[in-house]
Structure formats: C-alpha cells, structure tokens
Length: 148
Image (cartoon, rainbow, N blue to C red):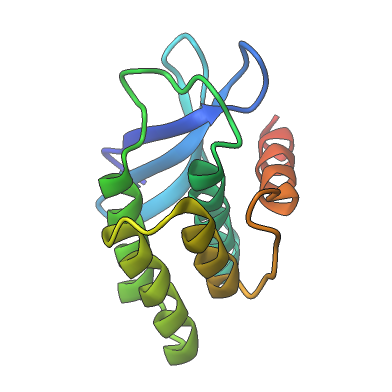
C-alpha cells in the first residue's frame, strides 16, 4: 500500500502501539504504529480477512474499546464511514455488500453506537453483545502480535 494515510482508533496497550487503518491508492488496510511515528500495515491474505480486520476496527471504534489514540491520527466518524463505503464498493458478494451498506448507513445517519455495532457485527457474519466486542479486540491484538 503506497502513499498511506493513517487513522488510529486507540492504543492496544497502555503506552503501547496504536491500532487503526491506513488508506492508500489501492484501498484500506489494518495498521499499527508506535510513538516514534512508525507505521506497519498488516497484510491480509484474503479479502474476507481484510473485511474482518476493518470491521473489527469499526466495532472497536464505536465501542470505544481502546483509549488514547494519538491526537494527530485520531479517526473520525467520517473516516470510518468512508472506510465502510469502500468495503461496500469492493465487496463481490451482494448479500455481504447489502449488510455492509446498512452498517455504513448507520454510521452516516449517526445512529447510536450499539445499533452501529450490531450492524457491523451482522455485516461480518458475527453476533455479538453491543457492549462487549471481545472478538474484535482479540482479533486486533492477535494480528499485532503476528506482525512482531
């Protein structure tokens, strides 16, 4: 992913690496960064893996699962919405695209966080309690550890 711009949703660990996404000419990817300004993009082996990575980012954003994103990189609702619209446009499966579209609409419409989280979970084919996205947190933490 060349010419990447990053957005962070928070830090995985206290004073640790930030987690977020990077956007570039060829789309979006899961990204991690350190306090020194470095960034690593986590390659996704399949389209489904990439979708699940980005949905985990969006769920954790709306659940406020991580704290203290770097102020200069902090993701906004609009950026999350743009990422989700890209997922809709690049999704080959019509049923999945419809669910992703519903999640993107929920973000754009400013629906409550628990409603957005439920739609994001449904788009990923997962049912989850709106207040406890343990699976997305675990997914992002494990993806970071695999990069190390």
